[in-house]
Picture 1: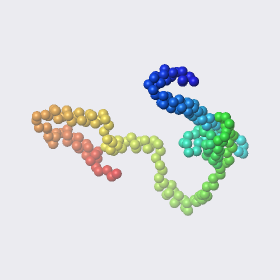
Picture 2: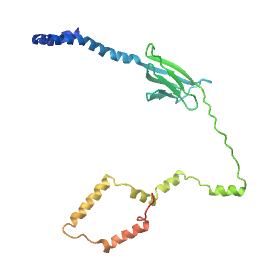
Picture 3: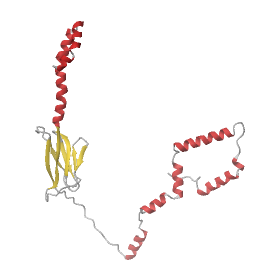
Picture 4: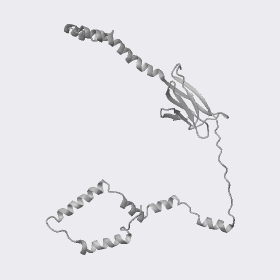
Length: 232
């Protein structure tokens, strides 16, 4: 009845205006609205369960660290710690899958009629044995053939050799020629073009065909192979 005394001046105003039918509708709907607002959070709160427990091996009862605990079709989960202990918030009626490399997956269901908001479990995992196909090792027929194959075998480059190739001058030129200008370089090139245009405004620009510096730059670029077509 708190809302009645709180809104008493508003009720008198509507009665004076003759809005008696509107007041009847407001009085009829207000209890249901308050009931829905108070019961909806309670229902959602009662459906949440704190699931906790430990994941262990079935044969030796040893803790399994870093095992996955996933809620099916929800995209959320957690992993066990070094002692195999986990804790996660789930809803009643959801299915929880336990998985770990070397063990078979196990799935449990949270009871929908669970009383309370806590559910503990000791999940035992069974070892999963995978059989690989047999591999047969055969020696080379002769020592000469073994030496030939050993010498001609292609060995992948180590990290040092890979870094040396990626930082070579030729590789840098290839990367620079294929990369677009960034913002700073694009603005600098645009400003240089505008400065050159304004510098020779009202007169003919010079011809670089007789410029020794331009010829030197062209010859150096030609020696480096900047004008060679690269196959992609």
